Image (cartoon, rainbow over the protein chains, first blue to last red):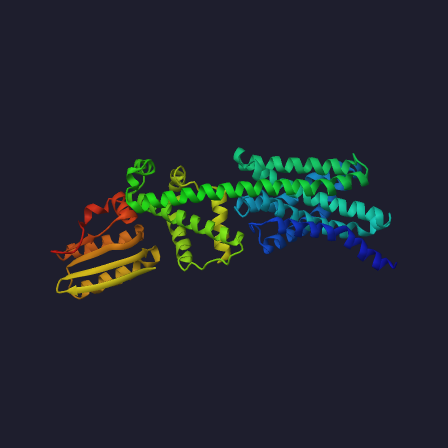
Length: 335
Length: 108
């Protein structure tokens, strides 16, 4: 085999299964929470993070000593760089469930691994194709898995506080990465553990997430419909939610009016988004809604009118959670 | 999308609104109101029975219309408000600025 062909097959064997696994994850995403473009951007970020890590690692290698840094320094740098994109996605409410967090995380890790494997190709191929497949593929899956862990833990624990959850996710990922780099297991055992252990873990996460998504959609749809019914009957101000709204008399009357409108528009949009999601899930075409654009613009107007303080005050009766925000972002992105 | 229909007999005019009066459709009402005032209307009944949404932007136009007519010795009456539109008018307290009627019969 020529060196060029060996490089080609080496890289293919090392990275192709990682992208195949990424594709499998996307196929498991029955609610189509993640769009292909999002995956491509995440892979791109992973590649950039990989390049940045190569530069940083080279400098820090010299400063701290290769042995110590490889085991205890590099995992911090690499996991932190990969996690940046997940922090951005979670902060921007572009990721709200375990499934999308896992897919976007794994995609970042796949991009990172692609760059890293290209950089270390020559070095690892010197040890033979078997070592390459073990180290190249195993490390690539580890990078994907560790980044996915950041997203999954950050979403899973977000009720404890968004930043705390993200730090916890990063800590777990650094821990996994450090164990990998310390060589606690032999390369074969480590690769087998990752390759055989990760798919069932993902299937479990996806099943749990899908159940949670079904429950949330059902409960929230009921809430939206109930709120809309209360508003349309004209008796809203006599309900407990209406009494609460009237008690907010520190706000100007026109702001209180716009709070009522915000309840109406956000419930309408929320119900419409769930309708779209259910149709998509059932494989039906998404029905065109001519009023949707206008409602989204009206929502922007109302949020500005009510202001940050108003939105906080409205929170007990307008639970616009990160999932609801994500849903609205999705609705806007699909237009 | 808001639909608007106007009619006038002498100094008395009617504006019927239907659909959603979102912030971006406020100019429709403003233009219709200005036109009727320009034609000599001093009493305008705004029929809200077909309206399903109104925010502060729309209420602002109604209040402005009312101020313009008061200067001319006229007024605005709001008719047929119900559901969430009535709720918004109540909580914004603008309800006190207008004559509220079930319909336009016998007015003014």
